Image (tube, rainbow, N blue to C red; front, side, top):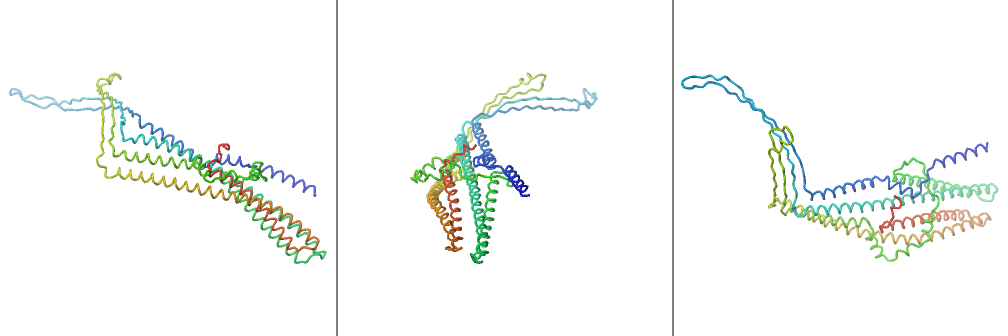
Length: 454
């Protein structure tokens, strides 16, 4: 019977392991870059911006159109009656005269804008800037997706390791409760110690339940962000990679000592900051476009017209030919202040874009400074937490030995285990906090590489 149950357990574990899909960080980022709906819309908008640039070039080209027409009409006239000629009345019979007429025509023509107050040039420059700005915004969006994916992924792995800590804590408390119960039966410890151990074991179970809930919630949020089915069974790495271990063992704060250099690097690399600068230029082109309403407009027109009343062959259309070329000069005199309003709105738009640019600059400064300080604190906290784990483990061993010899109290033992569990929890949180802050600083500096995941 035991052999049968053992075989069933092994088969069940094997089946569950086979059914799980291992999801690495690189795979997750690749999936996010492929499935993110906001990214898909941004890529679609790039194509729209390219079309806008093409249309802006088209404003410099002459237009050309062709038309053809055909017409038919019938005229009926009645003739007849009577008239007198040399005293003789002559009666003329009533008759109806019918005449048909047809017309055929064709024309080719168009117009060309010769001068429009430099509006076309400003429009072309603005459309190019908008395209470049959209491309930079797309880069920033990709960097954001990579960082958000990393953040969510490390949250899942962090909670997974915290779950293992709580599982170990439950196992320890169960063994401790069993030991104390047996010693109580032998009269070595009091019943109060048994009750205290039971309470502690129950608290450990509650901690395990909370840890499981945190892990499942983090996993659900992560899969939802990737666009995957949250009910799918995925597994994640249960240990740090060699690159992550190297990151933890390296004091990265030594590489970022000069804060002004960090800010300069961010302003040189951040795609969103570059995009905001281009948005200011686009807004300035809008002022030129609006001001062109005050300037004269010169357009040229051209037309070639063919007409015929009979059409036995296409050559008959050339019976009547008309060529025309014209120039039209439009001079705005008064527009009811509409042009002034457009110019003023364009200028306000420029000022607002400059305000947005300056606000973004301040935000970048604050983000870099805050992240850098947090990174320094995380590095220090990581070292302290690592030492606390080592000290807590040794203290737990001493407390266990003292309690086994009767020279220590149960409270000392439970306190030592509680401190050791908290030390392990703090160390795991410190590890992933340091890793995430390092990636966050790269993101704020605009150097987070997304191309290697595409």
